[in-house]
Amino acid sequence: MNKYQWIIVVVAAINVVLVALFPPYDYVSAARNNVLTFDGFYWLFTDVGGRKVNSSFQQIEYFIILINAAIAWLLLRPGAQSAADPTAAGTAGEPARKIDWQRVVLMGVAINLFLVLLFPPMENFYAVTRAALPSFDGFFFLFGERGARTIVTQLL
Image (cartoon, rainbow, N blue to C red; front, side, top):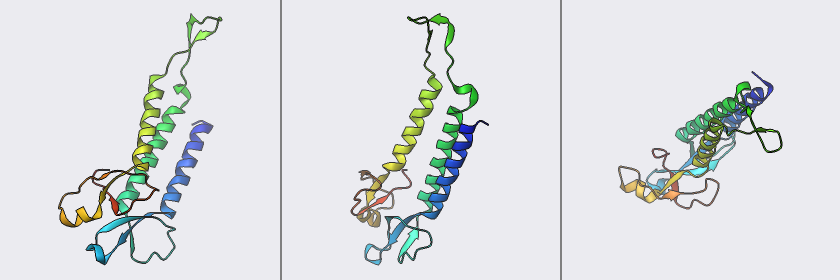
């Protein structure tokens, strides 16, 4: 294990601790027939009143952290750097550079996982009270104004 992989392990551990200390909460409202609505992230040791930890969303966060750490681990392993082909000479006598497609694909997957977590699928909480199956209202920024929407963890 090289020093960059150790850094990945430390960063992933810090992220896991932060997710544990600031879990996602749902608001339970009697006016909405006790339908859980995503309310935000709060300090774990704070009195949050009528809120409940959204354990499904928190498990998804842990999963995303571990997948991204595994991708970074693969990208930073000692043999992952793309070596130039010494037989192919460049224009200035330098070796030609090859594209490391494994690295490109892994970076694409990491960006995709980050965007999925940042823009989760949401539904209107009024639809939850009337429908047995979740409805889909669109993808909205996690830290933006969500109005009367809740995260659809079944679709996420």
